Amino acid sequence: MKISNVEIVTVSERGARVNWRADRPADFVASCSSPVDNKKLSARVEVVNGRHYLAAFDGLVAGAAYKFQISAGGGTVYKGAFDTLKKPGGRFRFRFATINDIHVGEEIYGLIILPGLKWLPLTPGLKLDIDGVPFWQYTNEAVVRELNELELDFIIVKGDLVTDHTERNIRRSKEIMDSLEHPYYIIRGNHDRAGGMREDYFRNTFGVRDGWQSFEHKGCGFLLLDCIHPKSGYTTFPVAELEWFEKEMKRMAHMPVFVYLHNPPLRSIERSFVNRVGRFLGIIDAHPTVAGVFYAHTHANKRILRRGGGKTVPFVETAATMDYPGGYNIYDVYSGGYIQTCVRPHDKRCSRWFELCEKAYYGLAAARLFGKISDRNFTWSGPLT
Ligand SMILES: [Fe+2]
Ligand SMILES: [Fe+2]
Image (cartoon, rainbow, N blue to C red; front, side):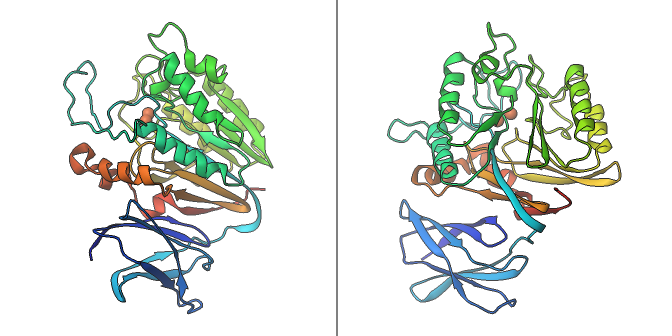
C-alpha cells in the first residue's frame, strides 16, 4: 500500500481537510490530536475514483498545533502536522466567498503563448473531457454545487469568466453564475476584455456599466475595480476609475474596506506602460483600515504582507476554479478580523482532472500553483466594526 500527494488544502479555526492519492483502494482511517486537550479525533474519510481520498477533520480547537496520521490495515502510512487558525476577536458578523478564473470555453489548458505566436506554444497543453463534459464545466459546476450548500451573504467573482471573449462564452458563463443561489458581483479579467470585438458582451451581459463598483455590507466597504487594458489585457488603472476609487475610499474612511481586482497589482510584468499602479497603492496607503487587496489571474495561491501608510495589508491571490489546485475561498468576518479558508471540492471528475494538471508547465504546475498553507488559509486581526 502506497499513498502519495498528501496535501493539507484547508485549515480553519475548527477543522482541516487533507487529500491524498492511494495506489489501490483501502479502508483508510485518519486521526489527529493536540497537546491542548490530548483528545484523539477521527476524520470523516471519503474516496472518489477508488484512489482520491479526503480526510475532513472537524470539532478541533482554534489556534492549536495538531499532529495527524493516516492508517490502513492496522499500520500507519503517513504522519503530518497542521495548526488550526486563531479565531479573530469579537463576534461573528457574516460569511461570504470568492471564486475566480472560471475560463468558460477553454479548449486546451496549460499553454504558454508569446504575443503573436499563437501557433507556437512554449508548453504542451492538456485537456480532459469526461462523458462529453469539458473540464471547465465540471470543475465550475462542482464549485457552484458546494457554494450553494453554504450559508453565504454574497460571492465575489474576480474575473476571467471566459477564455475567449465571444458572445457564446459570455452567455454560458452567465448561465453558470446564475446557477449560484447567492447574490454575486463580477469583476472583469484580462480574458474578458473586449478590445477588437464588435461589442463588449461582458459589460452588456453582466450589466457592469463602468466596470467598477462598490457596496457596503454590515459596516464593511467592498470596492471592485477593473484594472484591465481593453486591448492588451495588461494591468492599468484608468484615471476616471482612480478618481472614483479615491473618492469612495475617502467616503468609506470610517469603515474597514476589502478591495478586489483581477490582475495582481504588485506583479511587475504584464503591466501597461502607463499603468498608475503607484497611484492605486497610494490610495490603499491613505485609507486607515484596508482588510485586504484580493485578486486572481496567475491561477496560484499567494499572499504578501505589504507595509505602507503605517499599516500592513495582506495582498492575496487565489487559485482558479478551473484547474489545479482548484477550489474557492470562504471569508468569515468577525468584529475583530476575518478568516480566509481555501476549499477544494471533493469531486470525482475534478480529482481526475487535477491529477492530470500536475503535468502542466512541464510538471511545475503543482509546485507553482498550490502555495503555502498560510497563503491559502489565514487569520487577519483588526477592527472590522
Ligand atoms: Fe485566468
Ligand atoms: Fe487572467
